[in-house]
Length: 292
Image (cartoon, rainbow, N blue to C red; front, top):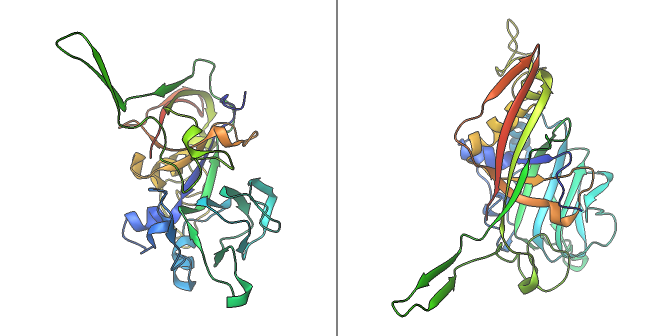
């Protein structure tokens, strides 16, 4: 089943994090939520912004374009690994959403380029740029995936009749399609809010923590290797989501990146506990909840 949890991946939205801490001003379309169709006016990657974003050391850059209706997307970066899903931008793509690993941070994204006007940027629901974190292995077997229907309320009248109100039961549609769909009818898209309770055992300390949790190395302010923003660690994931404030794209199985194992989510926890169970080995529990 595609919804099985195997080796999860978390896609981090770096421009949104920089905007949240006041280091960057971005167009609303570069916030993860809401995924509501809007024109793209300014990329958050002009020459000055690239310098700021570059401080986060994007060792695994990617782009995710959600809620677009494009058949072609022009981007000035090379797609690696053939595109994660619907991300082969050199060819025609399907409307809906696209995720692609890149060789560098792009400086322009043109959706459905119009060659008669010299290339006009179109519309999209949200555009995420940044880096991603792959968990080093699958979670423990004692995991759970739940589907919440908290938007459906029932009341019983004095006469004993049951009245049901449905305020919401699924992710709002992205334009004319359902969320995470590449076709079909939006009204028929899957329902429920997903929540994952995951436990990871025997994570190596190098997967959990950077070598140095500061911004620069000791005794050499110019060296950043192994530091908080450089090292691809779980602590960096927590840091770049402001401890759960900023949403991210969660893929429950990075080795089988299908539509139905993706979600926009947040950490649904107020603290993160790492238990050391052996020398340089840690256990951690995470609760990840779908948001919209």
